[in-house]
Amino acid sequence: MKLIIGILIFFSTVTAFSQENDLGPNGGQLKLVGEFYSEVLTNKDGSFDVYLLDKETKKPSVRYSYVTGFFESNGGTKVEILCVAQKTYFECYPRGLNIKKGKKLSLSMARENVTGNDVVYNLPIFNPKDLASAQGRIAYAIKFDKDQKYMSFRNGKRGYETSTQLEAGGSYCAIENIKLQKLSIKPKKKFTTKIEKIDFPNKEVQRYSVINNRDYNLYCDFTADADFKQSLVIEKINQHLNGWLKIK
Image (cartoon, rainbow, N blue to C red; front, side, top):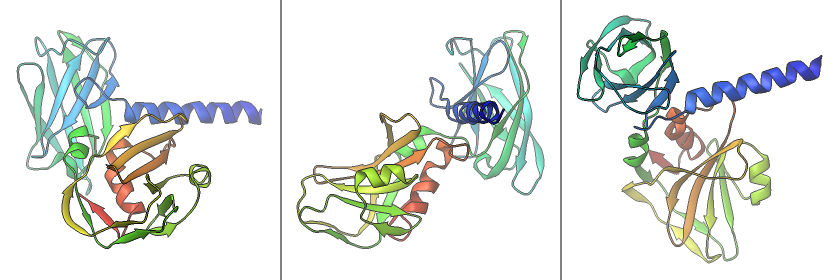
């Protein structure tokens, strides 16, 4: 009986993780809403775009379609949203509020005269553009001795574990000394990071490259648990690298 309950918990966790992190063809968060899919993508100005896609997540349509709903702020205030049809999507605005400063987004919609199920998006919503345009600042220098391969960071604390120890210990960030040389990473006031998800053999680990150059690679690993969301990648990276590297 305990084994069955454990299996059910595992699959419910995996399902929740998958639903929070499924990306649509435009890079937004994807949800099945009955006979079609909705894809929501946030914008820097506080608005958001909604694509109504077919069951193959293709053919966005606004013909005989609508999107309505309300936005709930962190303080509990609920306001209606205004959505205007563009060529292939709906551009929406929470009246007087910013989509990036809220708790949840509840939407009702129809695509080509087919009404979808009501759907709730937990905020913030992941936008790949936020990672592509992220700016970093290194606060202080870090030095590697010759033959020192790894330096790890967890919740602002530095360590020197091996790669095996790191992977066994849950979420963390690490700098890999590619050439096994004496290395000094100097402070930088501002630079563009290249945060991108990369393939990793262990499917329960989400790996993100943060800085990658010819001398060293900074990456962060996150276990695929119910608490991890792509929308919080930058926040989680800052949590581990607290004090050394700050990303906005």
